[in-house]
Amino acid sequence: MNEIPTKAPQGHIEVRNFSLSYDSIEGPVQAVTDTQIHVKPGEFVSIVGPSGCGKSTLLNAVAGFLKPTTGIVTVDGERVNGPSAERGMVFQQYSLFPWKTVRENVEFGLKMRGMPRSQRERAARTLLGLAGLEAFEKHYPEKLSGGMKQRVGIVRALATGPKVLLLDEPFGALDAQTRVIMQQILTNMWQRLKISVLFVTHDIDEAIFLSDRVYCMTARPGSIKAEIPIPLERPRQQSMMMSSEFLALRRGLMSLIREESLKAMGGEISDMGMQGLNIELHGHSLADVI
Amino acid sequence: MPATVIAEADPASAITPPTTPPSFGTLALRWYRLNRAGLRAIAIGIISLAAFLLVWHMLTTYRVVFFVRFTNVPSPLAVYASFTKAIHDPKFLLHVLLSCRRIFFGFSFAAIVAVPLGLIMGRFKLVHEIIFPVAEVLRPIPAIAWVPMAIMLWPTNEQSIVFITFLGSFFPILVNTLHGMSLVDPVLVRAAQCLGARERSIFREVYFPASLPHIFTGLTVGMGVAWVSLIAAEMISGQYGIGYFTWEAYSLVQYPDIALGMIAIGVLGLGSSLLIRGAGHLVMPWRLK
Image (tube, rainbow over all chains, first blue to last red; front, side):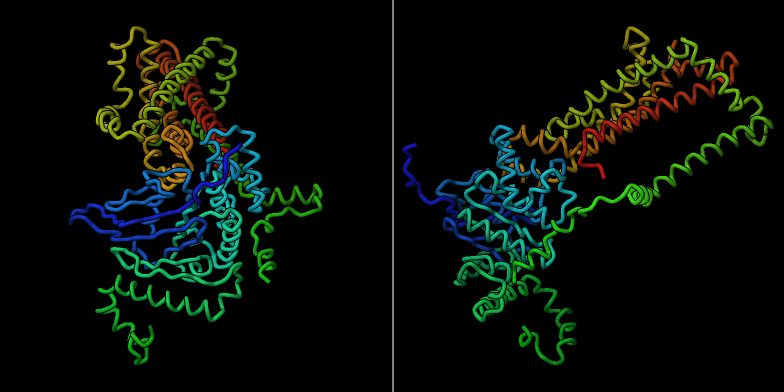
């Protein structure tokens, strides 16, 4: 009871000198190389990059599913050695347990912690209420829409009170309108819970709209190409996406990613693809259009 | 503005039920519309069964001989007559009862051994590597081929028949359980891990329920093979049982009883697979449409 709340701030993610490679028949393949990132307590940080750049690999290493080949991942100074309920994760494929009802899914983390049934039922109901899902607590996930599934996924990850929330392209499978709503729900929850968020996406608008800071990764082998602070004020409104400030950030990030995407597809673009593109470009060179 | 957008697009609002309850007439009509396909299937099913009986009746009353000889085949009415006699005959009921008991023990032992074994083999590579080769060698041997060996292995006839039934259902259950384990979505395992689940919980909460649909496929197939094996075993080495009854009817030239035995086997097989399907619905409520 006399505990003085002088604990160090929670949810400080640090990734130092990180690299990850795996073996193949042609020798080791470097997926991510020489990467440093950090997320301050309560900060919302996104990672964007061309597909296959290793941004999900990086996130999975923070989650504890993958071991770094070199370097170290820590959360609040403690080395990450495997998955734990301290780092909640939200997956693109929702990954709800189909054999559990919505409420049982949300209860799962609490059950694993050994919380008695009645207590965790109450906790799950409260959380589902916050996400506007209490009417669906007895439904099985299959019956829900994509947006609802992912709301359950987020609530489930938050139920155990993790220090950090990791999201791997969580809205990638949703339609544009649902996506916007989900972004607002996520922002809302993040602001209430003051939790650190590491968010992987390939959607530049989404990254800017949500984040305090955005890391942009290079093409494979992935490393950090740029770190862009997002100085937009909060709370953020949809209308801000039209502001000149937003558009300038967007342009900047867009060109960074495009450079890397072109590098990643280098071979295809430079030979036949280039000729094909030129036909549509009506005489402009590729560089002009990009 | 964003607030109204949320209200409109919220998927929850699309599923709210209407406020006034509809009348019985409209409900009945709606029910009919929704179940029309099912009702049609039932109606056609009844017609097709009736047609089957009619063709059988015609073929036997006119003793058709056209490549196949229907001269001695009993007519449906003769079979029905022997059926009404048989249900009052305690000996016939004993045949049925003993077959059911053999199925129950053989199949239950198979399920009790094969399901946990499949789960463990699916989870632990070493166990898989040790047991799988042996299982693969034994699997193609039909249960009937085990009859002589079973008679040598077990002290009583009853035990050897149960053993044959066990073998028949064992491998389908094992193979399907293994298949189910191999298809468990690794992302669900990860999801459980980062919610704090340890090995034992993951096994109970993820691997087992995820494999259940395939386990039940295995149980259904296994039940079918159990009956096949049982009947064969009873025909060869039985003294009781519905398979023995059918074979005995042939030896004693009681032709209607042959068909009666066959139909009884069919009905019992159908009943037992319905039981398994019902159990499946009970155990896997999330699979109900």
